[in-house]
Image 1: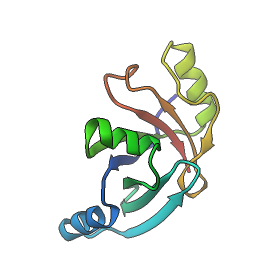
Image 2: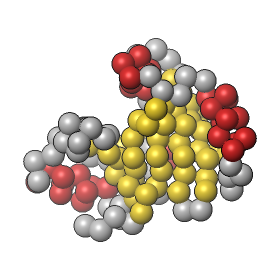
Image 3: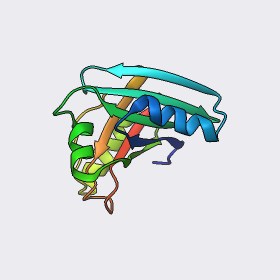
Image 4: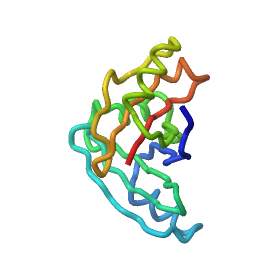
Length: 133
């Protein structure tokens, strides 16, 4: 399986609007889009540049995975999303190789994407996301 590219880098932040302002003060992005994912308890700002995005993640409620991440580790890189042709195939391949997959089947990601995660203990401390949009 060949990766199609880096979809985005997810960065957990405490204050979404301040983070958007900070990143936009340094860079001129192609677009900035906000998405609320109630199912995950997270608010997202997608900062598009070329074929990739910086995905700023802020908790919308206590107890969400991003909220837990921020309490344990503070702000910083949350995950790296690799664009793949088929998320189901990527899951199967990772499982067959013995990696700890957090999602047995693709779930709905931001803007209707298909996504699945591999546990950071499997990949040198990095939460990896298979992503297809």
